[in-house]
Image (cartoon, rainbow, N blue to C red; front, side):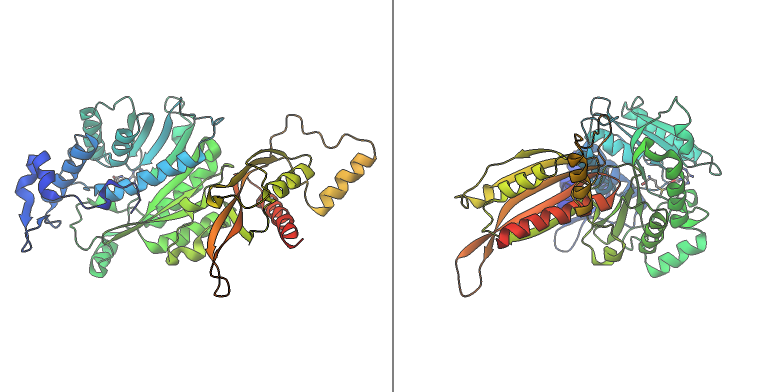
Length: 456
Ligand SMILES: C[S@@+](CC[C@H](N)C(=O)[O-])C[C@H]1O[C@@H](n2cnc3c(N)ncnc32)[C@H](O)[C@@H]1O
């Protein structure tokens, strides 16, 4: 579960019913005296969702009995993950700054409008376009939006099931031209037969009754086909949307979508795993822009995803603590690459500081091109000898953005020296750019300089 999920500790149902009395009839006490809810009772499930949204988010929501009842804790995992992605990549110069607000699209919002309502309840500057093909669900969604006074922040849109999923929204200036993210909890199945098979295999939520109507659960090409359509439309919309995301309910879908992204040369993607009780879901995100996603958010540690993960955006190397000159090595290396822009914070050390863990040198670096390879340095040298002033980059955008951090970590030493020693950690994080080779060659150059200094 997401570490910021309110439901890391399961709710006390008796207390919840006190704050939302309509829940009381659905509570029973088990033989250990524990108040519980029967998740196989659809009315009880619905009332629980309404109670949690009411007590924890101040939302008034009515879910029609014949439509999908969303489980709040797992819907919250997905919203929190998107919040993390946006927080980690929000650039001051971003076209959709905090002042303008965060704008998202929810594909297939359902009667509960669960994602837009949760997100808007948590963040006052978020707004949504929420699409739906089912007129009944859309009417219920409109009522839920109005009950919460969110008509000016959530715009429900009825879309044609045979038409595009979202690309047309970008052609219609009355909706919007730019957005920060797209999210979707797609229909899982390709047919009724698949639903029956999944029920036999107990693939989904074995402990809860599924309240979804066919229109909500079934789509012609199934979950994978639906997300493939999102990928193909994202190629058309491009960077008008910063991050495309989707929830995945089937493990087999992950490889299908990752392979599609790889075949389209989209390397800026990531995967997360959300575990909630018996339910396991995955999140996929990709971007056609330059903002690189932090490994902590998109390189899930789950073994089952290992082969499908993107390449890392952070490299780390440790060195003997003898490199007290880390700041100096970093500073000299950066100065030596004269066309590179950098800002360096930290202090020059002559010895290991008294509190080594508190030491940190930080550099923010941008580069227009490779000035560190042997070939590039020879070229610059030649230009200089010919009397030129070096390469002029006036007005051109940097192609590489990264941060470098040096700090110390404590390590218990081996038996021959029981005392604790410190090692220096050099870490580089790629934050923006399209050219992985530029980042990786810079890292090789920098880490080699540190290695050379540690053996001197
Ligand atoms: C699994 S439900 C998710 C509902 C809600 N977002 C939630 O998480 O509880 C999928 C939803 O997508 C809708 N849907 C199916 N095809 C769609 C399409 N082409 N465009 C927009 N919505 C669609 C269904 O009607 C349904 O409401």
